[in-house]
Length: 369
Image 1: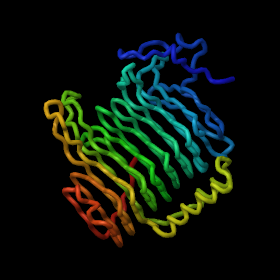
Image 2 (image 1 turned 60 degrees about the horizontal axis):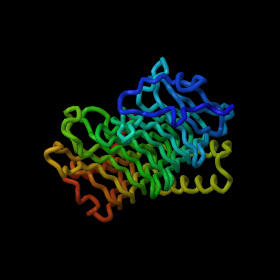
Image 3 (image 1 turned 45 degrees about the horizontal axis):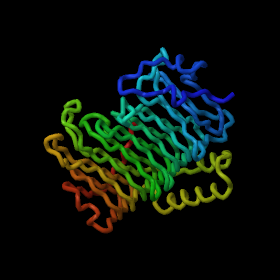
Image 4 (image 1 turned 90 degrees about the vertical axis):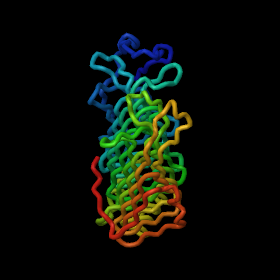
């Protein structure tokens, strides 16, 4: 039986906080905190209560696939089935398997008829041997949401976008923790732009693996916000950490997952393995970037409406080599640390940074997320 979802006509979101009961809007009670067991992820709206989640699993162990053009919408509800205006929590749980995201995962906070967020973004959690994303993960809100990925390796294709930003509040976090290769390809975008509050994990992007390759765009810039917004300092840049840890690089879990999963054809599997193995062979325990990495404050164009900002921080830490040739801009602090070689071409890559530090030997940093 097809999943029953809220129709557009019955979900007229008003600027006031929503208190309409979901059960009154739908004859059949919606599935809440559901566990969905299938290789192919079905589109629709999924609900969870606070501190719970919607789970997608595959007990047949041949992977999870959100196909292109398919959207799953996560929303949070109270135990009484009232919308909270927050985005929901969606978990793709496939340890030892492949997760493929070509479609859209949307846990944005709800918006008013004028498009303004009513509350906060939700969470997206991924656990798998290998993740391939070429679709959208959206977790925006008055306070951006959280995107946490724990994988052996991950590839972010040219159409991939992860957005945990806020247009007028705190940007939240994107955390990619891998024991193998993280490959952010040209065209991919990771952004948490928003206000950064010192001392808490806000406007934060952390990417860790044995190899970290960035050819895309990583953005934790500050924003220009009204000074009255919760008395926060506007325009502060965020924090970006790229860490290539020491240790052996083992792609066997990825090879096994690809061999057992039915979400890629043979040609796609070969192409994925060739690229990952090439990066592992040529750049073990190394970080490299030909793309754009920025964590700048946003300059205010209306001093009467916004407060001054602070620059952001970028740390690129490699147990072996750091090779950088793209645009890197952190208008407060920039640290590049490598156990062996640091190659920067051109050095003007760092022209907007006010505090630069290049050092050896490199540090091994454990990612805590």
